[in-house]
Length: 87
Image 1: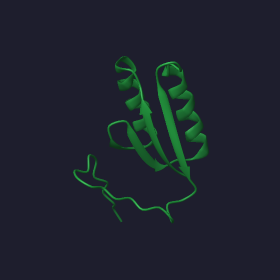
Image 2: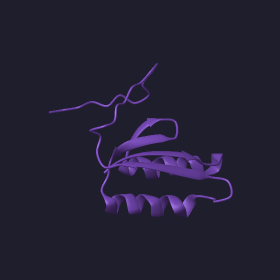
Image 3: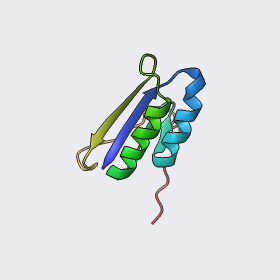
Image 4: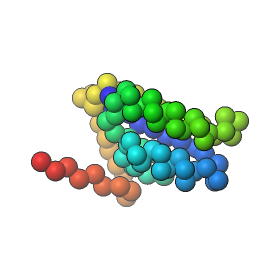
């Protein structure tokens, strides 16, 4: 599945959230990640994030798409993390 994950963590926890997300997804820009991920790895990522999230201060939003066939990605301005495709 393809996911887009965005988060808003407090300053003290944002670095840990960044490291957790980078293990599974591609960093796009501040607090935004995307990529293909298995259901098992998505469960692991959610579990790891739930260990550091403070539910009264922080938030994580995950958009799940079955595939990218009907989606379009457009960047206006500077692309923070260029994605290279190697064949």
